[in-house]
Length: 146
Image (cartoon, rainbow, N blue to C red; front, side):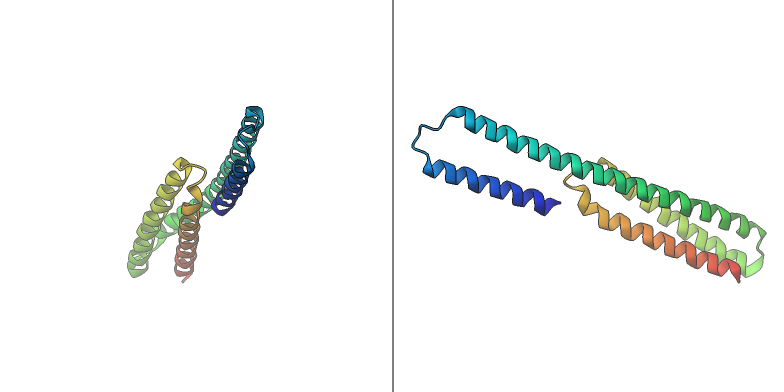
């Protein structure tokens, strides 16, 4: 998305510079203003699209977080029933899960507050974090089944 914005702006600036070179100083101001309005409209549209993509991604990740949280709660109940070394091991895994879940939540907060242009930079980190959290939950569930 960032590349698209940069490419569009670069193309528009090249068109403007070409217009300036071909201009004999008698260019009507209305045409320039109309062109500037068109550019601003295109930029606004791109920003709105980026914000919509961000909101959809945040919604998807939130749904995944809700599912993971339910699985963590289920594991918590199972840990309470466990005894001995298994209970100690599962408690440690739960602590790790809680820490990872809090990190994902923090990354989501950061991403929600970022501008439409910068959220893409955080997207990969959030995706990696939620995938890591899912993997940890899966491993903890496997250990719980032992």
